[in-house]
Length: 166
Ligand SMILES: Cc1cc2nc3c(=O)[nH]c(=O)nc-3n(C[C@H](O)[C@H](O)[C@H](O)COP(=O)(O)O)c2cc1C
Image (cartoon, rainbow, N blue to C red; front, side):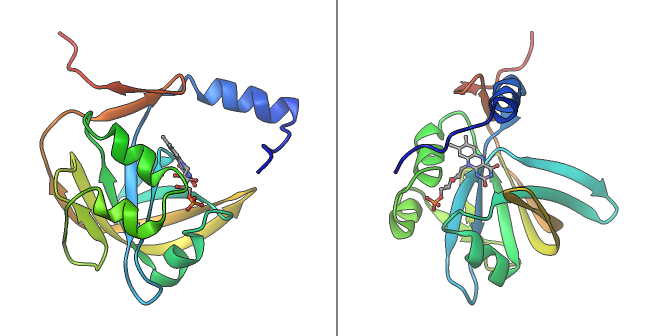
């Protein structure tokens, strides 16, 4: 498939965003529309009352309808050993193969929870807002699971392992 031609404003925005470091997450769901997952760096906290985060999802992604129908998701924050898993969930890999690359369990929703995630947020989608090409999914956090390990960061169009500053 041909790459889309970007305007100068779009290219400038992407170049600028490449300098904003972000945690890497695999977002999963399961429910009436089936199981799906994708890699996302556009995840952030909204408020702690009620505990809410947001996830930005491209409406052209193959997983879009599945998330919108299931109305639940789990944000699985990746560790520095998860670069292959990030690329698997961030590419065009068939869905069954994506989930075969790791082991999973469940919390209170039916969304798969990555066994060795640095942290996992099990959520129900409470609101959706469309902006340009993406939907902003507002997600109320129903349960969290703290793991161990250091986070995986995406910065300057490359992965970086996170280490504590001395
Ligand atoms: C590091 C990284 C971060 C990404 N962040 C997002 C994101 O925040 N939102 C999004 O919609 N897609 C994001 N993507 C792209 C999706 O993961 C990718 O479009 C999706 O997995 C492809 O799905 P499809 O082939 O099933 O359509 C990211 C990909 C990578 C590798």
